Length: 337
Image (tube, rainbow, N blue to C red; front, side, top):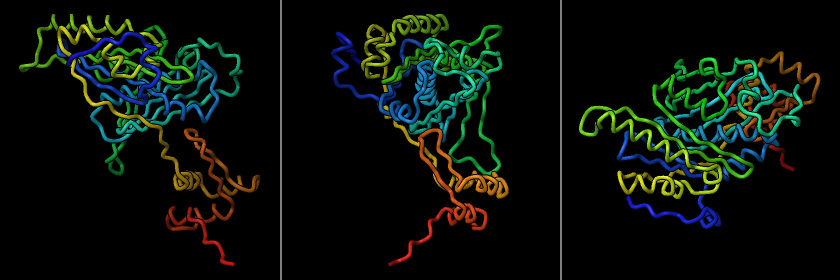
């Protein structure tokens, strides 16, 4: 594949296709790469809540990292990444389906003055101040059978005695400890877009494609050095394919780089009235009735998309008296006049 060098970033940012994932592999080393740039889906996530700058940056990094990680999986279903802790941020969560439909949100500690958070506050400051934070990655197969639990991996947000400082470090730590795969990530996010680059060292297996171990190690080191030259501006403003060519022009000329079709990314939420009804049913009729005694209706909104769901006393009665939830959430027919 021949690469053509791009002269300036400005020349490429007047019109560019965002919300794309580019996957590629290197012929000169057992390494795969991915680049992502997300604009429209990121704006859809930010439209729901006004996050402090430091929170928004961590959430953007998680969104980019989650899409990159999802791109490494041959898996049908949903991947959920959660960063949990006891700081100003209680929870960061991203859900990414196999078709790269994403949603994300942050739950904050309302007892803390969020407006006073430093803009440069990092992961250890905001999520892991007490050293008890953790990263949880859940894979929920689309064909999961009743009684079958999703696969879940958990790592501490500490690497030995050192607190993990960034989302990139947290994902790399998870891949090292849970999947035994060396992984590097470069992430960036701002109020307009989020983006990232992933390199993953693949097993140097036997067969015709096996490389000399020294050659494989040298290739992994070389590709990390090339990737270390990437800037936040490039991650945020260049199309993935353009950035791939910019970073690995010489690598392509001397060793070869093979890319695959770019995959689109979009925002989407799976919330529904029937799912909220199911939640109320699990809450119990007594608890729901106690809410109705204080208020005229039970009202809740989706943390991901902001959709508001309202259940009045009649709706709640239907939930606990109907044989199915589908019947319970049906609106009664309007009388004809």
